[in-house]
Image 1: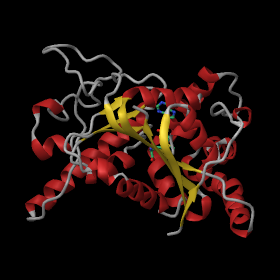
Image 2: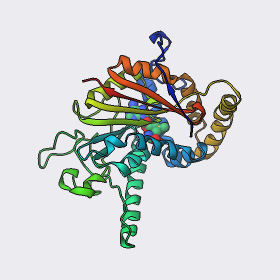
Image 3: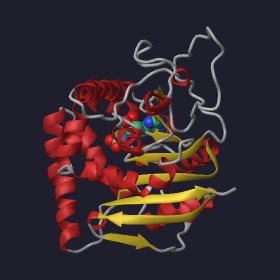
Length: 320
Ligand SMILES: C[S@@+](CC[C@H](N)C(=O)[O-])C[C@H]1O[C@@H](n2cnc3c(N)ncnc32)[C@H](O)[C@@H]1O
């Protein structure tokens, strides 16, 4: 697969969009509420459509992201957050390689319910593979404090935002050991702009196709910066618009004309799949997002552009 590295280019902040703006949203709170409602609505069909509409390439993009992040994932002490985790596919891709711990966070409850179901499915298939003599990684979702650095006092009642989706679904992460600890993924219901994690909690915060949906991109980057340790890594995988030319034009036709129809038919929510190409058209080009990342306190920022300029992985490191 070809990869293009994007070089630094000065971009006027005035040109940059502030955050996503779904149809009819009057302000940031409204935009955020509409995005949440939309994902809550499409959760049951989200994975199917994701794989179908991207011709299964979404799996490859997440796997490739995990491969690039391998130096962090291989650290035993690494704490990793999949931000805007949705149904958990990036968290699972990261956990397959991770020796440390992985968390997921999203504000759409039904997406997290799917993530948990998939995690439990992985447990079952892991157990089947182990029974047949093949060791396999597996995932569960269980309770862990929303702050990876903090523990709840014994007997404390978890609050609504950080409660486990399934209180019986797994022992507290702190109570498990070795491999089991590694494969326990707590999925936390929370807004990316107000994360319930302490300052400097994570070594890596990664987001796949979620960052574009934030109502305020700068606030999102500052919140990611807050929960990252000094020297910690940010990784944002997002759609981008390919440049004009036969491929770009064909892609735009597919993305704007075919995808909303197909997505609408299968999900029953045409608006959600009309929102997708519109939100991508409004979103940054890689050189714009990398510039905003620099201005928000990240260094060593770069973008890897894949698949004909349709997606980009933006990475950087929190300044010390
Ligand atoms: C397109 S989905 C991506 C899900 C997943 N990361 C993936 O790779 O398939 C976008 C996700 O971002 C979540 N999201 C959008 N804005 C959010 C916010 N402000 N806080 C938390 N989650 C948010 C949505 O609920 C949705 O699950």
